[in-house]
Image (cartoon, rainbow, N blue to C red; front, side, top):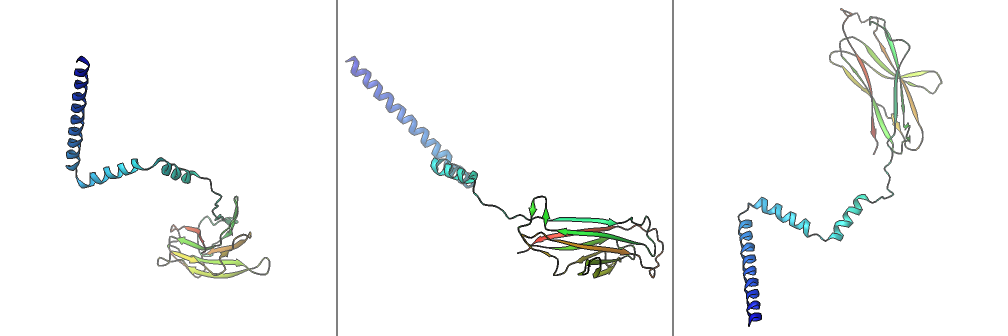
Length: 209
């Protein structure tokens, strides 16, 4: 009799526990139903992530850190811009300066594995009547030929030099050399001559498709 009573008590306790669990689950469902749609969507997304099989998650991680043998083609180049000789301390009619520009498709990392085009940009303040002339090395050693020139003015402060020959092919070390001659021609007499100006030379490289 005593053993039967104990068994009955255990059964009642199990029924009470089951009822308590069902009430808790029901209350959670009721509380979840009162959540706003965006929060419900967020919870659903979180549950979806948790429900993902561990083997799928492991494969994704392995793919993210896997060491494949893929390589990215090198986009290498080097630009050197240096004045030749001393620059004028002050500019006046008859003053002149020459800048040497060297463009190469090779750097310390090696020769470029992609073809690239470039353009030479000259930026000024537009305050002095300076003429900028771009020269390239000709077929005859030691001689130069003019590509183009422009007259600096308040209306033309920036000029871009670009030709079809400004192309560096991939896989073969190539250098192009230019000279930018900046001069204040005698015929241009501007006053006052103490006006501030500047010259900035940029070489813009782009990968060729």
